[in-house]
Length: 233
Image (spheres, rainbow, N blue to C red):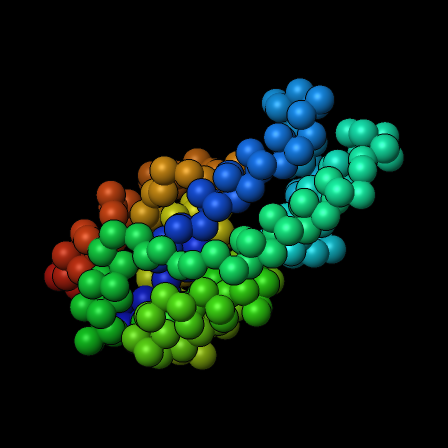
């Protein structure tokens, strides 16, 4: 079946995201200078994973997890100015300008000419809407889905709403865990575009044996890949 709908992830697929989290995490470690950096990273990642069910994905949950970790590692002795600095760092993240990744605009523009292109991203609603508006890509998309998580059911619903269903759809993203594997499970194509920085939560083994799995080095290769898939016997 021809691909009629293409879903794009946002963070670290179309624009930079994880780099900002890494920089803020370094700042967090500097604020808690008496703590072992490696142990602090482990405690923070544990808090983030523990809190996903409460706060979801995004900057606000990250900020609350930093505060929780600061309280834990100092056994409740963290100073109020440190908490204030963590809150300030989170607000800076929420104001940070959007930096598109190479070939993002060109790839979406080219594929929007003869496909329905849909942004499918998870995270905080207000922040993702802000980033989409600042990216300048908003007018290129035929639809936008901002979801709490990415599952096969989410992809089945999104591709049915914006196209002919997952059998005639592809999902493009940097996360094997969130963008590729559940899209494949839904019956769509899964196109992996690796990013140099990937949160440990999003890491997974590539499904090399899956017939509908493909990997490309960057978005510049995506239009040619779609043409190749279209011409498959």
